[in-house]
Length: 640
Image (spheres, one colour):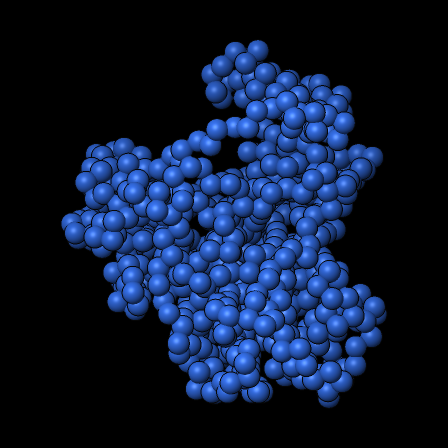
């Protein structure tokens, strides 16, 4: 977790150090280990250091390549360093070591944008090429490290966070209504949007070239749609998964400084904590330097998961801290705690997470591991009954059908049609021999109206162009056949997931911590998507492959006991009890109503229903966070 930012004037007009300083000052926590700048004709670059991996301490940035005059700034942790060093043979730095920034510069020089798919790890970096007055930037495949920019034809501004770009003199801050509307309806599929007009995110797996005042972003990496993992037994699949997961966790523990994890009772954080324990014991490292933080609920005991997490702590000898959570309900810290100037997107349980991060930093932790994408790799939403049929897994097929039929209370024939016949026909129709014919014969679908909550102003959706259903963000590449496999792809690369990752990165960074998610390791993602979906999970066995892979890694009694528990009772408590006065104040005369974004009457009516025991609408949180954000940051917006 470091930071980078810069300004390029395409006419070569001077860029002042004070302009760059305003950008670094907007996110000072990214440079707790020092900030360095480089100034050239019409360009200024800054690197904010917060070292986590050991090689980061050797990488003085901005890094100038004396052979070409190119300058690079990077926020990176590369995981296939040995392969890259062997292939690129970069000249070491003055201290004899090769930093990640030096490797990224060498990779770009040797292979160009197209070759960055050979780089594995979490990174965002920018290279200034003075002879062409061109800036090149790229972001890692899964979107772990952020990169945002604004290009108006005259100048380019870029940074790790939106608020850095907005802090630069001369950058206007105007609300971008399509992103506001998307936030209200809970759709985050446009990976380039921010809530500010003209300020864009570089999507995951994309590279950016800016020259002569024109910016062009293009994808440099995607999963190989033809890749297939075909192993003899399910045990072989579990062994393959386990090996990759061990690599992923080990790469993120590569630091002399203590690491930690938010440890719940689920398989995702419990699995990575157990793998970390196995790795530390094999190395002979002191496991007490690995810190775990778990929620402790007394009055909301149904949300307490320590009956599982305590077993992992005891098995490996980790340091454990219980975070008392009963009063850390959503909005309990408002207005001091909440969204930043970056945008209104805020996780529901920021107060819970934030208290753990404060304690982690006090404990000397530098890297916090997360199970962020674990749910997506084994999501029960992705079913593959046609795959079970092709594999001759008839007993398993019957179990899934019976389970679904019982869950949905439908006939067996209906379940067969919905889960087996319809997907099987769709799989066949998508194959190359039939796809052109299907496309020619199928009439174009009428676009369906967006289903929005009653309080979202229809005029906003029309103005924003979102009155008809928005397209999905990342579309699975041609050749990735199979409904279940394509669905897995879309789940892993969903806009909600990427927005959550960016929010988590900024939250951890604000606490001086690096965010690392082994479940988002690209090698693991590629393996899972290439594996038959029915091996990865089944309708009646969510996270089947991951659970099998962790046999012998997690304590067995714990592995069997892991379960999904949500702190949702905290949200209910806030809406129905703790935050009543705050919510009444927020919705009495909401700013978002004055701006024409919502009709407050149905919003207040829905909240009244929730207080009487009704379930909260999934998008209620997005309306509340938008209102809180507007109250705090609208005064900083020019020409709203």
